[in-house]
Image (cartoon, rainbow, N blue to C red):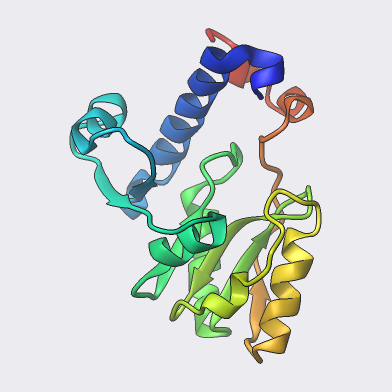
Length: 174
């Protein structure tokens, strides 16, 4: 997004996406998992004083998600999924009754949601994060680990400049 919006514009878009996700998931009492050097107070000042925060650990996206899924059962969603809402996330979470892992496929070959009864690092081992085959790699890892996976509804995420055409309202008042 930086190439299209500049660093400040991309950061502003990310903040708007986070606010949108928190508002749409408010009935589920979401926890914002964060990384980086900002203090908890700075995160709360930016996104709401009553916000529950959790620090993610790990070297890559898979490790961060595994950290957020611990101890389980838990659901992790991306903040860059403008069409996500509490009903979709609730339906996906209910699917944990049918399978130990639930994935919400993303249109671009990744996933917008992962839910697990118990975290299992094998699911994310060796995944090429950011590629168009992330979902396929995670499904292959699940099959190799003998983990049954249920698939939630497919949604689009907003992580490339061309994705912005889907949601022109994201750029209004930017």
